[in-house]
Image (cartoon, rainbow, N blue to C red; front, top):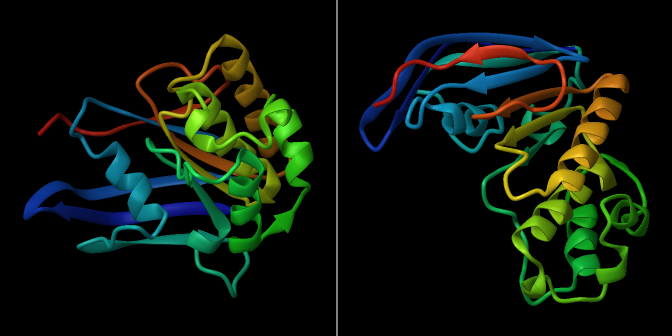
Length: 200
């Protein structure tokens, strides 16, 4: 499987964030997108996820499910954890399991894997920032998709959470998945760096 972009131009709020951008990554690989604030790291992930439309250029996937869009084969783990505060931890995860398509694994088992099984019935509003990130990671485990798009994935995680996520990422790559991660720091595993341009 190969995910690639050719000649991508991104315009937000009437401002050109970047243009003429080419990238490529394959199954079993981590592409670490680096660069200063404002260089377009998050915008690139959002373009791949289908949350933004490129002003020019194209993004393509070879070797995926031909009847599905890229966004239907990808998880986007953004800065904000997409949770409903009034729902319990398990209810939040169950919602995503039912809403998203993909290979399904048990929600309870995923919560145990990220160390949140003890908080399954707790409203998400009571979770710490690190626990909210762990719950978002559980979504990656519950609904299996080949592409992980991760924006500062280690943010808010403690040392144990960091190690857990590295293990999950390694397992994902070993199953033939690929990861594109915007990051300011090391991810804790081998990655090919893709540096964005100067700040705007």
